Image (cartoon, rainbow, N blue to C red; front, side, top):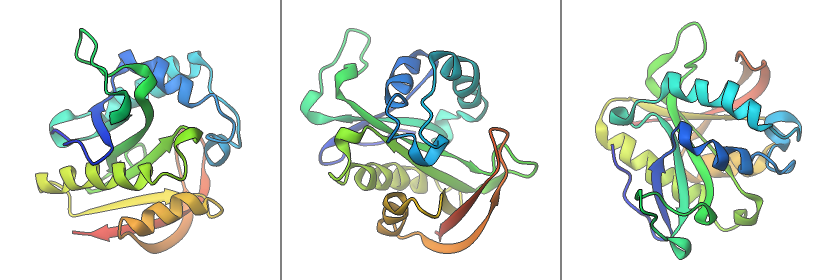
Length: 189
């Protein structure tokens, strides 16, 4: 699957070679506030936990993975055709809902996002999520898309609403990294 550039942003699937980008993003306690109570990740966390998790669900043909988001303003190409690190502003996650649970929902995709604080308030999360969501929907594989957030994460809930997702429930989300109460928004296609 390919995600076409949007007005201000470009996209590519992140791989295990992008651990440095993931690490840098996770160094801001404000970015991590609703993920880990502000605890930043170490490079060891990225290499030993997050990259192995990514490898388990990554499926480029179905669009599953973490889509790196890059500003056009810094759209410098390197020799290996990757975008320069300084243009990286965040990522969009796509995978089957409850992928790490006992019964993954193969026809319902989860969408999530994480962005550098310097890019907050610019509409990048909504722009990027919409672009990735549109590309995934065009594949015709899934019947719906959903997102979860902590109930106090009003910014993420705002993005969910801008994407057309509708509140469905509040529940205890079970994950190997820890269970947490979340709000669940969903959009059927």
